[in-house]
Length: 304
Ligand code: DON
Image (cartoon, rainbow, N blue to C red; front, side, top):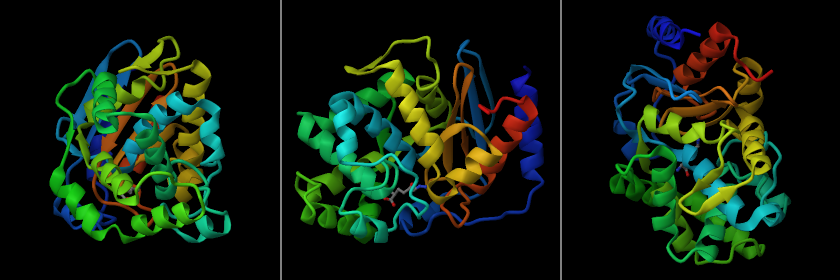
């Protein structure tokens, strides 16, 4: 498969599209990014690498980070984790509070904000140095030491994250949060403001798709069955109320973030990351989504 040729074709087709979508502006610091950035990196289980555009430029990974913290919490708690967070698509925006109230403070899945906040609560309870462990884990997955968070973005999120504060307090009132609300939010904003480039994301996600390799990173181990479950969650819940569309049009397990990144996995073949900051109304990258649709169409490599 000539992935490099396919990526070049995608870049040409994407550049010819109108500038649909807008950069995330509910986090003021994220609104400062150049909306025209575009990059893709694809890496295969044979350690081949293909890239176009701004694939080496770091960006805010935002909700893509929820896959990393979930992998750690799943490794720590195993099946017990699913007593505190569900595994069903929400059919709702990532920051919707309505469902959380009538479902008694148990978030639908670990990728809506409320679910990711429960996952953080687990990490704070189970680990002595959760922040150190998160960075060690992500660095181990990518093989790169050069990964950290952007404190200015974290602060910007903290100042405007009133709904996230509401989620934590509602869940605490309903008995599904153990730790101090401010500690949870502090960790969550650091996690969301991690900066990575497309290559690092593709390398990290390849571990979720390479069933031939033992999954142990920085002391966190997952069985092959657990890795499959992470993929199932990405497929069914990774794009919030657009997860059905992503499965329908792209057909890969993946996760988006409001920084404009999407990382996706074609198990036993490749992982790919794409970045374009303009988002659609569901909070997913317009060009990122379309690029991956073109990729699976041109390479005939969807999981279905
Ligand atoms: O809490 C928030 O709203 C952001 N830190 C993360 C949201 C996000 O990336 C949703 N993804 N598409």
